[in-house]
Length: 192
Length: 113
View 1 (cartoon, rainbow over the protein chains, first blue to last red):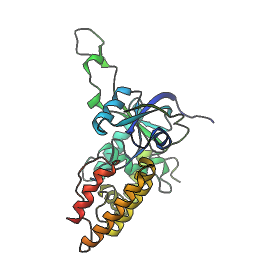
View 2 (cartoon, helix red, strand yellow; view 1 turned 120 degrees about the vertical axis):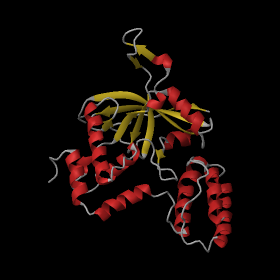
View 3 (tube, each protein chain N blue to C red; view 1 turned 90 degrees about the horizontal axis):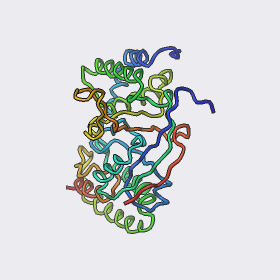
View 4 (cartoon, chains in turn cyan, yellow; view 1 turned 60 degrees about the vertical axis):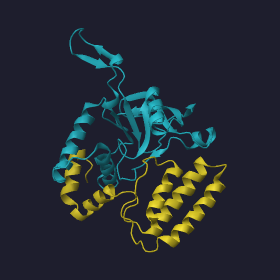
């Protein structure tokens, strides 16, 4: 198979509730996240969620969202610029999203939507004939800045200045389908 | 025909050319709460389906008979109590945890209240 676009191989960590035994979890994971009962979309829209190489965040999610009764699945993922709408490291994709969001906001009486809802909307439109290229991706990746500011992972460009980076950003990956172009393996690495 | 248009141009074209009713329908569907506006029978149908495909097969493969009998008795109980309700307006959200059958139970009782 010819893979188009620049390639990034990474490890994904998926957290799910620990029920049904190892075999059942492994067979059925990753689990599809849908809108909740209030109609609110997940972070990046409906799909299969992974933390990008972030086992600590996977444990944190299990602790806070599954009452500490959770399992973690690890998967090898291949992300390309053609399959993943990358709001982390692809400036073209970031700029495109801003343009799309602004355009929709103009239509929507200036109302700005959450990222997940707008992505769900674009995915629905892209199923229309002649509009497939509005959003032709199989997944999306973004940074959760609320979980990316731990002080111990700050590294300064110049000591004594305010200029720094953080080497433990929290990247969220949402896959819209379980394509073997992206998802290669899954291993149950933890359960509690 | 639209193959050469950028995503932004396509979105502009879609919003400009498609009937407002069609776009509003998509937006309303996105805004709709999961069970809002369903008839009671539709609600039961969806929940029953989710229960059988998800809770029983995935999470309760061993003790699922207990849940089947529980669900059956609950359905029978509610079907006699909620005849006067035609449409579900809002289901109380007791918990955002979608994957736990037990947390869905209170919202079913809220229906009958």
